Length: 274
Length: 274
Image (cartoon, rainbow over all chains, first blue to last red; front, side, top):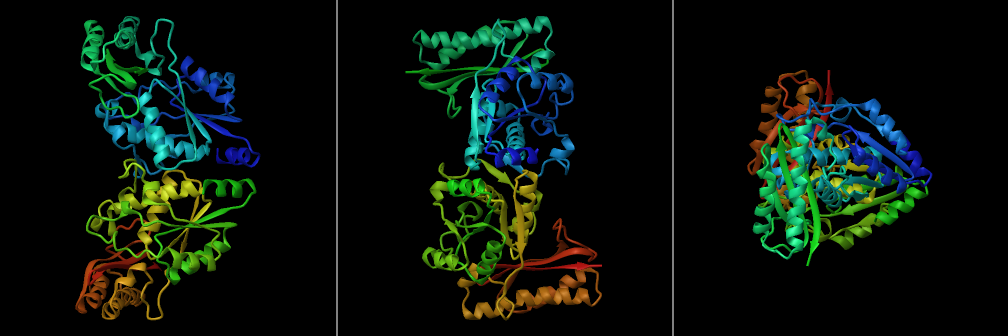
């Protein structure tokens, strides 16, 4: 991988990186396709990173489908698919040296998944270094992750541009996620309420309401009204700091995490409010 | 700084980095001179890193002598002297994103200076990234620091070679350190006992003793016998893992930290024992 990047660099070509955990869906396809247009050499990594999973989470059952993914990647113009083994990434076993994601890593999903974002930050720094990427591309569904990676790259003075890409949805609005594979048809139908609630919150704000608590309560009702959607958080916060807002104003993020059956899903919408 | 490195890289030249806190002595001179021989472009950084000082340590009074240092660096063939301000390195004030040095950072000096090596690891990663160094050069007086940086660079897959350089001593054996400037003549005379004790330990081992505790006790007596040398630690440990040894064997480190008056000094010798 280093050799590929060294050659690209020596010949003046830019290297783009799309770090993934595989199990590609249309969100990955669109992200890789867009990244390919902005990179001379496009590298996609597939690595289900044990460091970012908690002990009771879905590391073991996370979908792994390397052959199918390789075909998809080839169809998206990916030049190199880099799929290291866990023992290559963490030769000493557990990671000892860590990148701490900082305070942004303690909010929202970080509050429910302790250490998760340290695991994300550590593996992304490693992959950026291995690939020697000039640019890396992330989807906005994992908006907190995007913000943290941007912050880490900036704080550690990494010479890389972090690009974001809009969340890709099914025609009925469900945000695409590899974890949607876990859902039964019935759960999938219930999961739609997450995005519905986010859109309702957005509509209420567009309608003129600026009291975040009122917006939040009304919208959250939509998710919770449906049996079997267990809301972890539903927040209206600054899209820059992730701090919850009392008054809706500026660049905001409406974000929700919820469990549908055994599956934890997240989604968000962002908007700019005068 | 990034532009300098980009130009060097584009023209196929290697960039070497000597990260320092300034207050140059002959140790720095020899280190920079050696680094210059191995680098097409040599960058020395001077940055007294607040992140690696504890609240009761000597951050405020650490010697700062930029003009004199600049002259010394020029005489050593340093191409660029990079001296960022604290506000440039940590624009948000305190560092939020951190590189955790791992278990090696909790031993020896790390046990007495909590957070010290996280501060070192974080600033060195930042400097390596800013300078885009192909190689970095460190003195062996701060052997634990060297080991930690090598481990961090490896764990985070940084594309950099870490070179070490033997400790430079005054003719009477005192390891050169910017903190020697703090010593009165009388303290300096007492400080000599640190190296004397390290050499005695080495001699006892060469003489055949393999019981680390016996070696340690005999040698430590030399340091403690002199009034006003307050030993923080005197250890015989693996030079690879820094774990203390019961039986002296393999690649070993004999290391001492001690206070002479208000000044904390460290020194070490390494040897290979069959």
